[in-house]
Amino acid sequence: MMSESGMRVSGMEGDVVVQKNVFVPMRDGVLLATDLYFPAKEGKPLPGPFPAIMERTPYDKENKYAEGRFFARHGYVAVMQDVRGRFQSQGEWYPFAKEAPDGYDSVEWVAAQLWCDGNVGTIGGSYCGSDQSALATLNPPHLKAMVVAVGTSNYHTSSMRQNGALELRFMIYAFRMATTSREALADPALRMALEKDYARVGEWLTRTPYKRGSSSLRYLPSYEQWLLDILGEGDYNDYWKQRGYAIEHYYQEHADVPTIYLGGWYDSYARGTTNNYVALSRLKKSPQRLVMGPWTHGGWGVSFAGD
Image (cartoon, rainbow, N blue to C red; front, side, top):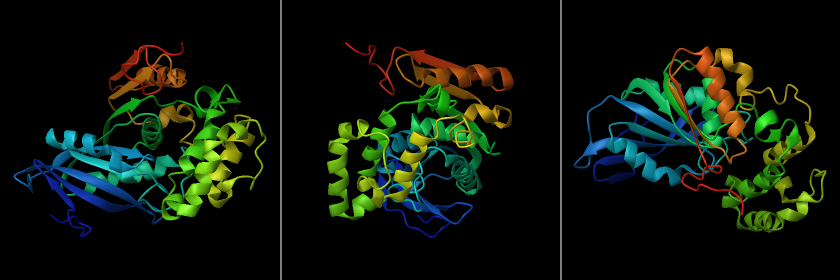
Protein backbone atom coordinates (compact mmCIF):
# COMPACT_ATOMS: atom_id res chain seq x y z
CA MET A 1 0.00 0.00 0.00
CA MET A 2 1.21 3.51 -0.76
CA SER A 3 0.38 6.73 1.06
CA GLU A 4 -0.27 9.97 -0.77
CA SER A 5 3.23 10.98 0.30
CA GLY A 6 4.59 7.93 -1.57
CA MET A 7 5.71 6.06 1.58
CA ARG A 8 5.38 2.28 1.58
CA VAL A 9 3.61 0.25 4.23
CA SER A 10 6.24 -1.08 6.59
CA GLY A 11 4.12 -3.45 8.66
CA MET A 12 1.19 -5.76 8.06
CA GLU A 13 -0.51 -8.08 10.56
CA GLY A 14 -3.76 -9.97 10.27
CA ASP A 15 -6.70 -7.67 9.81
CA VAL A 16 -4.71 -4.46 10.28
CA VAL A 17 -2.28 -2.78 7.88
CA VAL A 18 0.23 -0.48 9.54
CA GLN A 19 1.97 2.38 7.75
CA LYS A 20 4.89 3.69 9.77
CA ASN A 21 6.39 7.16 9.91
CA VAL A 22 4.26 9.09 7.48
CA PHE A 23 5.50 12.67 7.85
CA VAL A 24 2.67 15.15 8.29
CA PRO A 25 3.53 18.79 7.40
CA MET A 26 2.80 21.59 9.84
CA ARG A 27 2.14 25.19 8.85
CA ASP A 28 5.78 26.13 9.49
CA GLY A 29 7.16 23.23 7.44
CA VAL A 30 8.08 20.97 10.37
CA LEU A 31 7.19 17.31 9.71
CA LEU A 32 5.59 15.18 12.43
CA ALA A 33 6.08 11.41 12.33
CA THR A 34 2.76 9.57 12.27
CA ASP A 35 1.80 5.89 12.24
CA LEU A 36 -1.41 4.90 10.47
CA TYR A 37 -3.39 1.74 11.26
CA PHE A 38 -5.88 0.72 8.56
CA PRO A 39 -8.73 -1.81 8.71
CA ALA A 40 -7.72 -4.76 6.54
CA LYS A 41 -8.70 -8.24 5.43
CA GLU A 42 -6.23 -10.94 4.42
CA GLY A 43 -3.38 -8.45 4.44
CA LYS A 44 -5.07 -5.89 2.23
CA PRO A 45 -6.63 -2.60 3.38
CA LEU A 46 -10.40 -2.49 3.17
CA PRO A 47 -11.93 0.12 0.88
CA GLY A 48 -12.65 3.33 2.73
CA PRO A 49 -13.13 6.00 3.52
CA PHE A 50 -13.21 5.58 7.31
CA PRO A 51 -13.53 7.88 10.31
CA ALA A 52 -10.22 8.46 12.07
CA ILE A 53 -9.13 8.43 15.71
CA MET A 54 -5.96 10.36 16.53
CA GLU A 55 -3.66 10.45 19.55
CA ARG A 56 -0.70 12.84 19.74
CA THR A 57 1.94 11.85 22.29
CA PRO A 58 5.38 12.88 23.58
CA TYR A 59 5.85 9.35 24.99
CA ASP A 60 6.66 7.50 21.72
CA LYS A 61 3.95 6.52 19.28
CA GLU A 62 5.51 3.04 19.12
CA ASN A 63 3.89 2.43 22.51
CA LYS A 64 0.45 2.97 20.94
CA TYR A 65 0.61 -0.21 18.86
CA ALA A 66 -2.12 -2.03 20.81
CA GLU A 67 -4.48 0.97 20.69
CA GLY A 68 -3.86 1.45 16.99
CA ARG A 69 -4.71 -2.16 16.19
CA PHE A 70 -7.78 -2.07 18.42
CA PHE A 71 -9.34 0.91 16.66
CA ALA A 72 -8.43 -0.32 13.18
CA ARG A 73 -10.15 -3.61 13.93
CA HIS A 74 -13.26 -1.65 14.87
CA GLY A 75 -13.53 0.26 11.61
CA TYR A 76 -11.40 3.35 12.18
CA VAL A 77 -8.10 4.54 10.80
CA ALA A 78 -5.99 5.01 13.92
CA VAL A 79 -3.52 7.89 13.74
CA MET A 80 -0.69 7.81 16.30
CA GLN A 81 1.70 10.76 16.18
CA ASP A 82 4.89 11.85 17.93
CA VAL A 83 4.48 15.48 18.94
CA ARG A 84 6.94 18.08 17.68
CA GLY A 85 10.50 17.43 18.76
CA ARG A 86 9.92 13.97 20.23
CA PHE A 87 11.16 10.63 18.92
CA GLN A 88 10.72 10.56 15.11
CA SER A 89 9.18 14.02 14.69
CA GLN A 90 11.11 17.09 13.60
CA GLY A 91 11.35 20.40 15.45
CA GLU A 92 12.03 21.42 19.03
CA TRP A 93 9.94 20.15 21.92
CA TYR A 94 8.63 22.81 24.28
CA PRO A 95 6.24 20.97 26.63
CA PHE A 96 2.49 21.56 26.63
CA ALA A 97 2.29 25.22 25.59
CA LYS A 98 2.73 24.95 21.82
CA GLU A 99 0.44 22.06 20.93
CA ALA A 100 -2.62 23.92 19.62
CA PRO A 101 -1.52 24.74 16.03
CA ASP A 102 0.18 21.38 15.49
CA GLY A 103 -2.94 19.59 16.69
CA TYR A 104 -5.18 21.67 14.44
CA ASP A 105 -2.96 21.04 11.41
CA SER A 106 -2.85 17.31 12.14
CA VAL A 107 -6.65 16.99 12.42
CA GLU A 108 -7.16 18.82 9.15
CA TRP A 109 -4.44 16.82 7.35
CA VAL A 110 -6.09 13.56 8.42
CA ALA A 111 -9.53 14.77 7.29
CA ALA A 112 -8.17 15.67 3.84
CA GLN A 113 -6.79 12.18 3.08
CA LEU A 114 -8.66 9.94 0.67
CA TRP A 115 -8.90 7.18 3.27
CA CYS A 116 -10.72 9.47 5.75
CA ASP A 117 -14.42 10.31 5.53
CA GLY A 118 -13.80 13.74 7.09
CA ASN A 119 -14.65 12.73 10.66
CA VAL A 120 -11.77 12.91 13.16
CA GLY A 121 -11.95 12.10 16.85
CA THR A 122 -9.14 12.48 19.38
CA ILE A 123 -8.16 10.46 22.44
CA GLY A 124 -5.48 10.40 25.13
CA GLY A 125 -4.61 11.08 28.73
CA SER A 126 -2.44 13.51 30.70
CA TYR A 127 -0.26 15.35 28.14
CA CYS A 128 -2.30 13.61 25.43
CA GLY A 129 -5.48 14.88 27.10
CA SER A 130 -4.37 18.46 27.40
CA ASP A 131 -3.03 18.60 23.84
CA GLN A 132 -6.53 17.67 22.64
CA SER A 133 -8.04 20.58 24.54
CA ALA A 134 -5.34 22.86 23.17
CA LEU A 135 -6.17 22.04 19.54
CA ALA A 136 -9.89 22.30 20.31
CA THR A 137 -9.43 25.97 21.27
CA LEU A 138 -8.69 26.59 17.55
CA ASN A 139 -11.92 24.79 16.54
CA PRO A 140 -10.68 22.65 13.63
CA PRO A 141 -13.62 22.11 11.23
CA HIS A 142 -13.23 18.33 11.05
CA LEU A 143 -12.85 17.63 14.78
CA LYS A 144 -15.97 15.65 15.67
CA ALA A 145 -15.42 14.15 19.16
CA MET A 146 -12.88 13.92 22.00
CA VAL A 147 -12.08 11.71 24.97
CA VAL A 148 -9.96 13.90 27.26
CA ALA A 149 -8.48 11.90 30.14
CA VAL A 150 -6.80 13.61 33.10
CA GLY A 151 -6.26 16.84 31.19
CA THR A 152 -6.30 20.38 32.52
CA SER A 153 -8.23 23.61 32.21
CA ASN A 154 -5.39 25.89 33.33
CA TYR A 155 -1.83 24.85 34.09
CA HIS A 156 -1.29 27.84 36.37
CA THR A 157 -4.24 27.25 38.69
CA SER A 158 -4.82 23.51 38.76
CA SER A 159 -2.06 21.42 37.23
CA MET A 160 1.57 22.48 36.80
CA ARG A 161 0.95 25.15 39.38
CA GLN A 162 -1.79 25.13 42.01
CA ASN A 163 -3.13 28.67 42.31
CA GLY A 164 0.35 29.79 41.30
CA ALA A 165 2.42 27.44 43.50
CA LEU A 166 4.63 25.22 41.38
CA GLU A 167 4.41 21.45 41.66
CA LEU A 168 8.10 20.61 41.82
CA ARG A 169 7.41 17.25 40.17
CA PHE A 170 7.47 19.14 36.88
CA MET A 171 11.12 19.90 37.54
CA ILE A 172 11.56 16.13 37.76
CA TYR A 173 9.55 15.80 34.55
CA ALA A 174 12.04 17.95 32.64
CA PHE A 175 14.93 15.73 33.68
CA ARG A 176 13.01 12.52 33.02
CA MET A 177 11.84 13.53 29.55
CA ALA A 178 15.36 14.65 28.66
CA THR A 179 16.58 11.05 28.97
CA THR A 180 14.34 10.07 26.03
CA SER A 181 14.94 13.19 23.95
CA ARG A 182 15.83 12.78 20.29
CA GLU A 183 19.28 14.11 21.10
CA ALA A 184 19.84 11.59 23.92
CA LEU A 185 18.66 8.66 21.80
CA ALA A 186 21.19 9.66 19.12
CA ASP A 187 24.15 10.23 21.47
CA PRO A 188 24.97 7.56 24.10
CA ALA A 189 27.35 9.86 26.00
CA LEU A 190 24.72 12.58 26.28
CA ARG A 191 22.12 10.06 27.34
CA MET A 192 24.40 8.78 30.08
CA ALA A 193 24.93 12.32 31.38
CA LEU A 194 21.18 13.03 31.35
CA GLU A 195 20.39 9.74 33.09
CA LYS A 196 22.97 10.54 35.74
CA ASP A 197 21.31 13.89 36.45
CA TYR A 198 17.87 12.26 36.50
CA ALA A 199 19.08 9.61 38.96
CA ARG A 200 19.93 12.38 41.43
CA VAL A 201 17.04 14.62 40.60
CA GLY A 202 16.15 14.89 44.29
CA GLU A 203 19.27 17.00 44.75
CA TRP A 204 18.08 19.47 42.12
CA LEU A 205 14.86 19.98 44.09
CA THR A 206 16.94 21.38 46.95
CA ARG A 207 19.06 23.59 44.68
CA THR A 208 16.40 26.06 43.64
CA PRO A 209 16.43 28.43 41.97
CA TYR A 210 17.77 26.38 39.08
CA LYS A 211 20.48 28.26 37.21
CA ARG A 212 20.93 28.06 33.44
CA GLY A 213 23.74 25.72 32.46
CA SER A 214 24.02 24.03 35.84
CA SER A 215 23.03 20.56 34.60
CA SER A 216 23.23 18.45 31.46
CA LEU A 217 19.95 20.05 30.39
CA ARG A 218 22.18 22.76 28.93
CA TYR A 219 22.62 20.46 25.94
CA LEU A 220 18.84 20.55 25.34
CA PRO A 221 18.06 24.28 25.12
CA SER A 222 14.28 24.00 24.74
CA TYR A 223 13.99 21.60 27.69
CA GLU A 224 16.11 23.83 29.91
CA GLN A 225 14.27 26.97 28.78
CA TRP A 226 10.93 25.38 29.64
CA LEU A 227 12.21 24.52 33.12
CA LEU A 228 13.46 28.07 33.65
CA ASP A 229 10.15 29.48 32.42
CA ILE A 230 7.88 27.42 34.67
CA LEU A 231 10.13 28.15 37.66
CA GLY A 232 10.39 31.87 36.94
CA GLU A 233 6.93 32.82 35.70
CA GLY A 234 5.00 32.95 38.95
CA ASP A 235 2.22 35.39 38.05
CA TYR A 236 -0.73 34.54 35.84
CA ASN A 237 0.55 36.50 32.86
CA ASP A 238 0.65 36.15 29.07
CA TYR A 239 3.05 33.23 29.40
CA TRP A 240 0.40 31.17 31.18
CA LYS A 241 -2.36 32.35 28.84
CA GLN A 242 -0.91 30.43 25.89
CA ARG A 243 -3.51 28.09 24.39
CA GLY A 244 -1.74 24.94 25.50
CA TYR A 245 -1.71 26.12 29.11
CA ALA A 246 -4.94 28.05 29.67
CA ILE A 247 -7.75 26.15 27.98
CA GLU A 248 -10.35 28.04 30.02
CA HIS A 249 -9.14 31.35 28.61
CA TYR A 250 -10.44 30.19 25.20
CA TYR A 251 -13.72 28.47 26.14
CA GLN A 252 -15.77 30.71 23.85
CA GLU A 253 -13.60 29.69 20.88
CA HIS A 254 -13.44 26.01 21.88
CA ALA A 255 -14.88 23.42 19.48
CA ASP A 256 -18.48 22.42 20.17
CA VAL A 257 -18.13 18.62 19.88
CA PRO A 258 -19.27 15.66 22.00
CA THR A 259 -16.63 15.09 24.67
CA ILE A 260 -15.99 12.70 27.53
CA TYR A 261 -13.88 14.11 30.37
CA LEU A 262 -12.27 11.34 32.41
CA GLY A 263 -10.52 12.08 35.69
CA GLY A 264 -9.62 10.84 39.15
CA TRP A 265 -10.39 12.31 42.56
CA TYR A 266 -6.81 11.54 43.67
CA ASP A 267 -5.32 13.30 40.65
CA SER A 268 -3.88 16.79 40.84
CA TYR A 269 -5.74 17.42 37.57
CA ALA A 270 -9.13 16.75 39.18
CA ARG A 271 -9.98 20.45 39.34
CA GLY A 272 -8.96 21.01 35.72
CA THR A 273 -11.02 18.04 34.53
CA THR A 274 -14.16 19.11 36.36
CA ASN A 275 -13.70 22.78 35.43
CA ASN A 276 -13.64 21.87 31.73
CA TYR A 277 -16.76 19.75 32.06
CA VAL A 278 -18.76 22.29 34.06
CA ALA A 279 -17.88 25.26 31.84
CA LEU A 280 -18.20 23.56 28.46
CA SER A 281 -21.39 21.69 29.31
CA ARG A 282 -22.96 25.11 29.94
CA LEU A 283 -21.46 26.85 26.91
CA LYS A 284 -21.77 24.20 24.22
CA LYS A 285 -24.73 22.43 22.62
CA SER A 286 -22.97 19.10 22.06
CA PRO A 287 -23.20 16.51 24.84
CA GLN A 288 -20.43 16.77 27.40
CA ARG A 289 -19.92 13.90 29.86
CA LEU A 290 -17.83 13.54 33.00
CA VAL A 291 -16.49 10.29 34.47
CA MET A 292 -14.66 10.65 37.80
CA GLY A 293 -13.46 7.78 39.95
CA PRO A 294 -11.26 7.02 42.98
CA TRP A 295 -8.12 6.99 40.86
CA THR A 296 -4.70 8.59 40.75
CA HIS A 297 -3.28 10.26 37.64
CA GLY A 298 -3.95 7.64 35.00
CA GLY A 299 -4.29 4.88 37.58
CA TRP A 300 -7.59 3.47 36.40
CA GLY A 301 -8.69 0.68 38.70
CA VAL A 302 -6.37 1.70 41.54
CA SER A 303 -8.98 2.79 44.06
CA PHE A 304 -6.73 4.34 46.70
CA ALA A 305 -3.94 6.87 47.09
CA GLY A 306 -1.38 7.08 49.89
CA ASP A 307 -0.97 4.64 52.80
